[in-house]
Amino acid sequence: MDLKDIQELIKFVAKSGATEVSLEIDNIKISIKSPAKKKRGEVDEITTIPQAPAQVMVAPIVSATPVAAITASSPAPVASENSNYITIKASMIGTFYRSTSPETPPFVSVGDIIKEGDTLCVIEAMKLFNEIESEVSGKVVKVLVDDSTPIEFDQALFLVDPS
Image (cartoon, rainbow, N blue to C red; front, side, top):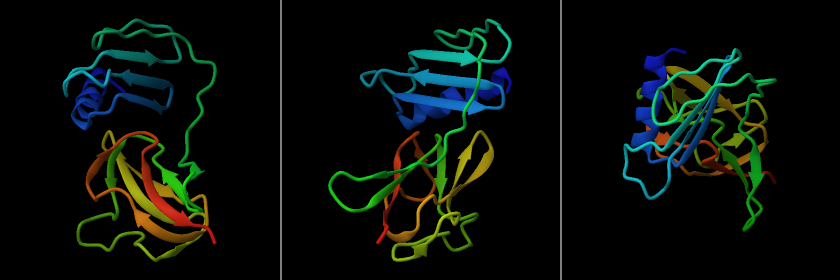
């Protein structure tokens, strides 16, 4: 990941209106934090942590220190407090796509029965398309995000009825 990629990520986060984003790719961990009261496009704090110690100025604040271990996050299903449904959330920021192209049908629709390992959607992050697989089995009750929409980390994407 080079400086241009980081700058593109900052612009994407600023456009999406996200207040906090964490991203881990290879040996680099990037955290971007912006207060909710700032206008779109204004980024408050950025922290970059590569494997080797280094200092790089990208935006207001950038600091680099060694990282002991990097863990990859996955779309963790979380039980909704108000119902028996399971909420499948985004494991990264990016652009949400229900299918691989506008001409193809969506991976899943409301009413579809899914099982663990089924592809639910694609999230584009930094020009990489990441297939998001289900970690639960059940029936898709609701798709919570419109196609081609910017999403935040941990944003609810689908409601699934596990029964």
